Length: 294
Image 1 (tube, rainbow, N blue to C red):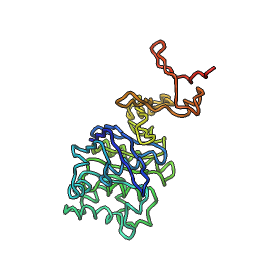
Image 2 (cartoon, helix red, strand yellow):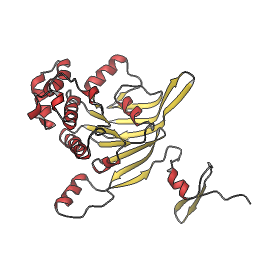
Image 3 (spheres, rainbow, N blue to C red):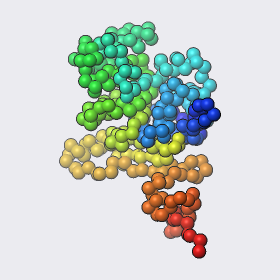
């Protein structure tokens, strides 16, 4: 579904150039449910905006559902945003129109596409568990219910890819869990590819793959040890759950480079230097601090 190769994004302000992405490589399979995590400024929201057709890469390769995002015309981009991708924002003011009911909010994008709106909108509200709130105005809905409406809107035109930018950032932990469970159910029932950007590591228990971005590149991936369905089955049978549901792998780039967490380097005494001693010992690669000159 998504293929990024050497993706670069440079923002220019006056004489200053800021590298938001620095040669990022990423593949996302069709029907995958995954999360992208990273600190503020790491490049995760920049990547999401480019996947959604809201921004263009400066260099590299980016294809989504077979479409080359660097070569698309403005007209093709508009069609892509209408037909291929759905977007859920953290700020509901970007998702919803406050003076419309939940049903009317969902009907609007369907109306713009020329499709029959009422039946499709009701189906979507039922899919997100909000049929009983269809006639309510937004101020009558909780934050979690508003986010469910936003998800229904994002699904209105049958997108193949659903992008969510911090979808649980303004919700309490209980409501956040419900929204994440909804994403998993939609992924399973509709087969839609879902990419969630977040700074919340709690998401790892809900999704199959977590990609970490640091300084504009993929630094590591966390992969689930066993399927989510297997975990739920074990839970129902009373089998104790593992504390660690995922295993983390560092990512090597094409030149064999990897990012080592600063905390690891500090723990072996590597500070205020850009040098590290690399040795092969008993089938393991060992990093140690450089020997001080005598």
